[in-house]
Length: 205
Image 1 (cartoon, rainbow, N blue to C red):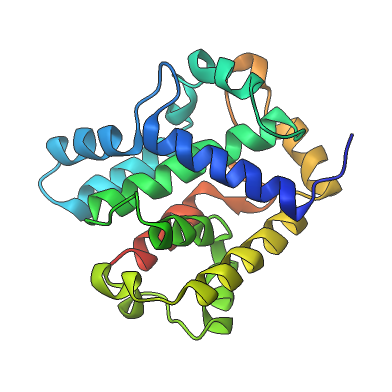
Image 2 (spheres, one colour; image 1 turned 180 degrees about the vertical axis):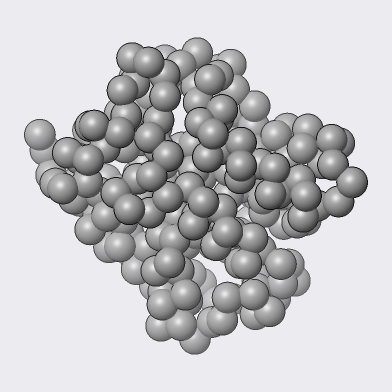
């Protein structure tokens, strides 16, 4: 098993984001998913809560096996279970960002989607960069964050995820992710989908 490095994590993040925005075969894009939830609920908050509940119920992975062919062409040697968990969670966060009116094609938005993936560590990562969860990241303000700050945030996220998916993470993930059954364990090494979803709710205001 090759070690999980920051470089590999960054590649998988970029790959997952691109697939979340543009779609894997047989799966909805983040924007499609957002529109589908918004059409079923009277307001954005209800739509977001319903999406997080659905992800927690592992409903998110039913269409996932059909798109698994895309995982075979992963740009990097990283266990498919980690890549698939990252993809499913990134798509959920991107869907929430879209529902709140953020442009998924913006690099800044992409960076903050990755920040949400760190769950409870998100507040610390932003604090180190002089940002606060919530108010500081309104749709317009997010565009004005300097490139240097974005770079340092991306680096902090990479380091945090390497720790999260380190050896121990792989073992836990192996148990939590029977890919054959098409189900992905909801809690990834202690950072559950719920925490990540709620972080996204706080971050994308």
